[in-house]
Image (cartoon, rainbow, N blue to C red):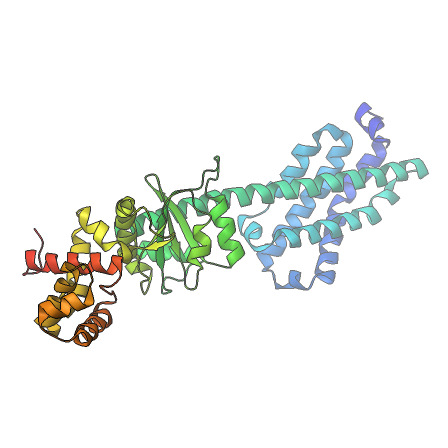
Length: 390
């Protein structure tokens, strides 16, 4: 008996019987899998051959391990490295656990009887149990490594999608990459911009991912410079998700019809985040469209055009009296009677006109924020009557 076999408690002749029987034991294990697992029959012939290969490798490695128990990590890992890549993708971790359990049960039934006496049979039972434990740990390690690699790849893919949206690169590759991440390219999208959470690496966005998962929201995350950019899917609770961002303002872009249009939402959200410092009392989150005055002050040409289109143009097209009433009302610091006297109309007429202004533009001159928006929009319309700011 060699020294390694002696440590295992079996004779050299017994080791040879185990080695000789390993092929039959592996075949019996695969037959048991086919009989007891309904999903096993749905594997392709090539995939079932892969399971047989892994089982044969494991059975052969058991015999080799009996000769050298110190080789356990290498031998058990070898069994899984021999699996075809397609099999690793097709069989889940839970299914792998089922396969390992059945294989070890067959080992327990088939290997101990090969012992020459009761002591050897007991030693073989102990060896099978120990080897099975190492095989299970090896399987878990293989799947954990695969999950880690997949996670790193998904994170890289996600970053590429977010970068493409921010840069306005709405190519076919954007849609295919987003689809690979489980995103529906045709679903509505809203871009949210803020500061990243103040967490330590390696995963500073963990808190945001966790909040999105708890809310059942579909999101894509990435960083743009020092900012965190989130692309949120339909129905995402933006106010709730914004609490997981870092300190400071959180700005939401307009909701767009699909991922290929998300660059518009991203451009507005990023422009709003640059300009939001001019409004210290801004809510969190704040819509980029509510930051049009600040964006204009920051030199955002898109905000200039949007203010003219959505506020100044409706007033102009409704007739000069509405714009004149707004300016007069603001000039007298919002005193209704004073505006009525200056316009030579009844105060109720002024009230009616102001209500019409609110209906047409969505803002009311009687509110501080509305007064700022209206004054700026009317001024911009005069500065750029052709609609093209210099």
